[in-house]
Image 1: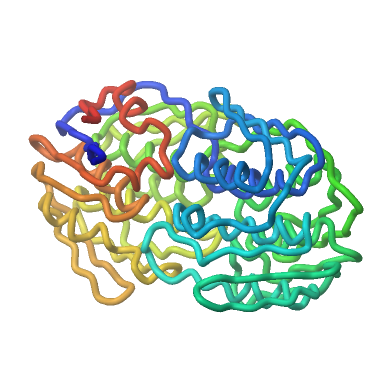
Image 2: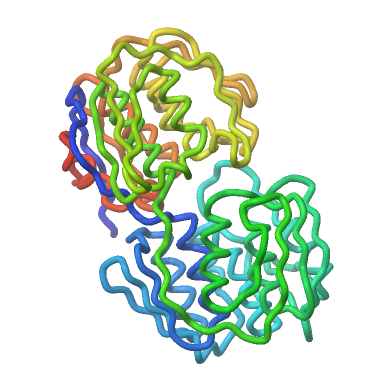
Length: 420
C-alpha cells in the first residue's frame, strides 16, 4: 500500500529572496518525444525532474530508446527504436503522451496507442491531430479505446486549424519534419514552447520557418541527427512563484527565467500594484510591498493572451485583494475545479459557467484541501501561503506533475512548507 504524501503549509510568512526557475515542462515533453525522430544520441539540458517527464522517459524506454537522467540532463539514444506501440498504462500517466503519435509516424510510419490520461480539466479532443495526419496520408482507425495510424510515406500538406491548438501544432511539426515535401500549418499555436520545439528540431537538421507566428512552414528532410539542447525556462512556474510573492506582499527575484515569455502575466501583476523589473534576459524581480488592488477582469486566451495555466494561482492572489475580479475561462471548461477548495479557506468566489467572480477578502484560514489537478494544486499552495494557521494539501501527485520540488523552492524564499 503506497503512502500518500501531503504538503503542510503554515501561512503568514512573507516570500523574500532569490529563486531559480525550472526548465519548462511544456517544452520538455514534446522535445523528449522529438528525440524519437533523431538517429543517435540527444542530450537535453534543463529538463525538470517532474513525474510527467519521468513518464515520457518510460515511454521512450518502452519504444527501445536508451534513456537515462543525470540531474537535469536527460540523454536519449534513439538508434534502436524497436516498436511503435505504447501501452495503455503508459498513455494514462499523462495527457501529453499523445505527442508521441507524430514522432512515431515520422520515424516508423506507424503507431498504436490508447487515448491519453492526465488532469481532468476538460475535454482536449484530438480530432485536429487525426484530421491533419489523414491529410498527410495516414490511415487511422479507432476501436476499443485504441488509435492505430499507418502511412507508407507521410506527405507534406496544408493544415489549417479551426482554433490554435498547441498539442496539434506540435504533433504536426513532429510528423512533418521527415515527411515528403512541404507542410504549411495555418492558425498555428504561437506559444513560446512551439518556438522551443522548433529550435530543437532545427538544431537536429529540420527546416522550419515561422514558429511563433500563425503560419509555420516545414520542408521535409531525409533524416535528423541527435544534438545537445537546453530547454527554455518554465513561464508558468515563474508566473506561479510571482503570484506567491505577491500574495504574501513580499519580494522575489526569479533567475533562469525569460521575462519576454511571461506575456500578459507581468502587465496584470503591475495593474494589481506590484513593481516588476527585468534584469537582462534572464531575471525578473517583483516587489509587492505597496497597497494592492484587484484587477477588474481577466480573460484567458491562446498566446499571446493571458495563459489558462496561470489563471488558478492568479485567482488565489485575487481572492485576497480589495475589490472584485471577473475571470472568464475560454480554454478548458473544467478549469475552475480549484474554486471549491479555495472557498474552504474562506475565499469568496461565485462560478457561473465559464465565468468566476472573485470578491477579495482580507483574511483566509488554513484548512485541509485536496489537489484536483496540476494548476489548481498550485493555486491552493499560493492561497495557503497567505492563510492564517496551517493548511494541509493532499493528492500532491498532481502538483508534482509540473513543479520541481515546489516545497524546497518556496522554503528557500521563506515559506513554512514541508512535505510529509
